Every structure is written in structure tokens, then in C-alpha cells.
Length: 109
Image (cartoon, rainbow, N blue to C red; front, side, top):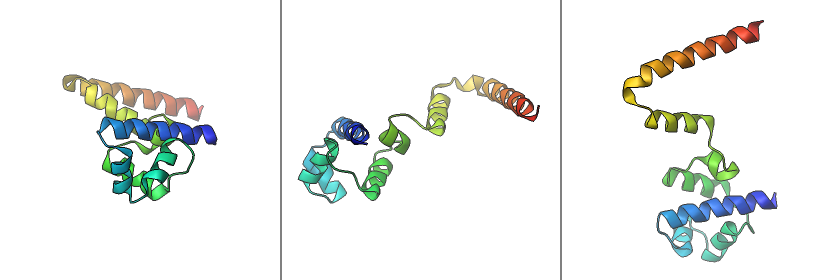
């Protein structure tokens, strides 16, 4: 549990720095003390869920990534779509549909 808090704090610190905020500024946005927010980033205190949700919503941070360090399947899929050549999307969807049908058939066996 302690390692997960430390990892979450590290990801929150990276996000904060990437948007150019000080710990004090982030604390003000979350309506918590700078001291408490510093403890969150160091993994010494748990972040209240409403504050984590605010951060994720406000700064477009995937909550699964914030907590676990991994992207959700949905997040990965949307990232893939953003990078995929638009003229090849139909082909990709056909491949995914075919693979889905194969998986369904395998489960029915």
C-alpha cells in the first residue's frame, strides 16, 4: 500500500510539474494546505477521492493511470485511434470485428 501511495504521489508530482504549477498552487486549486499536498506527493498521506477525481477531470488524467500507473483499455484504444491513419480506420475496424467474432466462436466451443 505504501508503494502505491508513493507511486501515485510521483505521478501527481509529474503532472503538476508538467503544467507548471507549484505545490502551493496545486494545493490552492484542491482547497487543501500546501503541507498536506506535499505529503500526498511524497506518498505520506492518502489523497481524498474527490480531490483525485477533480485532478483527473481538470487535467485530463486517466484515473486508472493515476492510481495504477497503467492506462485503461478504453484510454489505450482512444490513444490508438488518435494515432491511426484516418484512411485505414475502416480496415482496422473490420479486423477488430473479425477478431471479436473469432473470440466469440472460441468461447462457444
